[in-house]
Image (tube, rainbow, N blue to C red; front, side, top):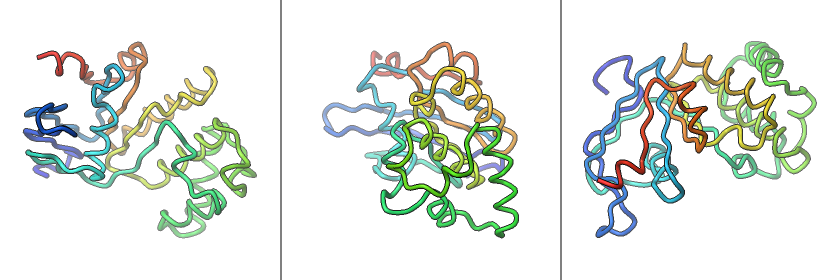
Length: 204
């Protein structure tokens, strides 16, 4: 990583599940702390593939991806938690704060997320999709990432809560950079410093 403010740098990325049909070819992106880049595009355009590449779950065919500390918020919260353990156990598993500091951070964020503390002591299947998604967002924020990956994070929430949650996520720009996947063009235009339409890239 070439500067302290750069949390993600992609240079000359090429990738495709079929080497003869590349999703990305010589793709470049740089995201700095305090900035939000939205990735939009139709189904199959490569939005989620980009997240998998940044998360190192996939390897590029060519090019480099340099990234600092990541936390992720995915569209399906049930895939983000182990079904056998409570939410608080799974938060404790990834957060290295002192217990008193963690308690203060939790209290602050659950109010902003409109999330009742009792939900944290339940297992994932005991919560609704919206409740669990807010728990997923809470865990991601508590990890204090340099880069926050957000994949349709408000799709399971009602409109009023979704607006409040997006405002909370955008407020994290004081501490990190955000890479957002969304199908909602109006949301992307509202919150983004830069908007990348993958349909236009793949049409070239």
